[in-house]
Length: 402
Ligand SMILES: [Zn+2]
Ligand SMILES: [Zn+2]
Image 1 (cartoon, helix red, strand yellow):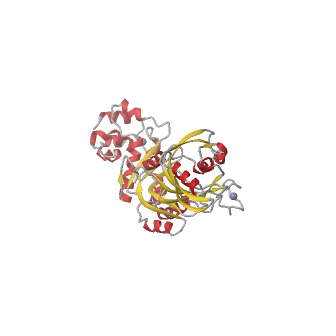
Image 2 (cartoon, rainbow, N blue to C red; image 1 turned 180 degrees about the vertical axis):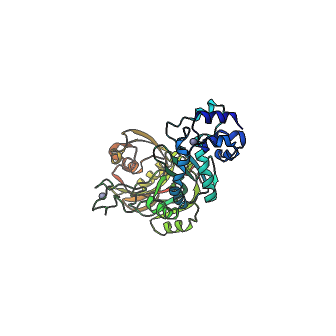
Image 3 (cartoon, helix red, strand yellow; image 1 turned 90 degrees about the vertical axis):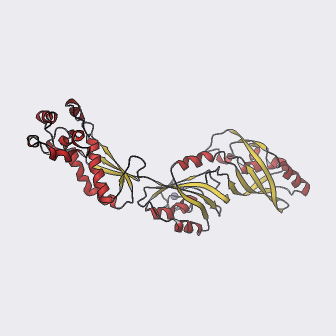
């Protein structure tokens, strides 16, 4: 018979669960209220119904009503590791009572978390963890008894090639309706029917039974540029996946069969890779193939001379190009062209350059000079107008991510 419990129940109306919590640490390290049976009849006679409890206000018992709604929702999800979080109204501060009576207490929060934890664990044969859960079940008792489920995203690391021009990397809202949907965009709200993001994410979303994804590329190429060679690293984030473990070979095959985008080296990764590829991209060096068209024909000597100039590093001063000046600050950037060479002569006015450049260098402007905003330029070297008529990215340095 515990005199402290006796004193508490003399002073306050207590429910079974609250008495059980109070003797938690004194009888056994188990969930509180199961210890209730160990109590002396004199205390049991003093317990009140949950709704009358002056300690928990009936919250512990009421919280369990949510199970009828929560379990069918959990039934649709695949998870092995979970965590329960509890939100309480601000006026549940009666834990103080226990301090006053010298009882070590399992808090209301922890009691509710344990009640749910044990039930979920038994029903769904899964494990309670403190870190890195597949799902977090939030029991919110602040106003009405509600629940929420936070599902950890899935992350896939890979490299993509873009085999056709005119496809942006990520979704792009329709310029007519700003994404609301209009006649011209067939109510999709999208400016482009196809995006690398869309093509890569769709089959993965289907497998994961998810509606949301996010695509993180290590930089991006222009819409009209191809991405060839070894491909560009990306992380695909699948949000709120109902399924977590699946074979994604078929997803890769269906992407690669589109003829528009190919992916390779796809593997599961964790969230930290988003930061990694984002931080690697600004200065990761790139190799391009650029088709150059001149305003006058060039003879062999002139082309040899141009080729020679590409043997050494060129330090560029690039003022923000006119074509992006509406969305980038107007600055002069120092960028390096490490080298370039002519790899193919198409006719007397056009040829293909292979250019090895520092990340962030504007290649089209290195060719044209952008009306004197980029110095020096191919245009300057050739003493005529030079235009980049096609641009392909051949290699993005992945800085050892793979
Ligand atoms: Zn209570
Ligand atoms: Zn539209």
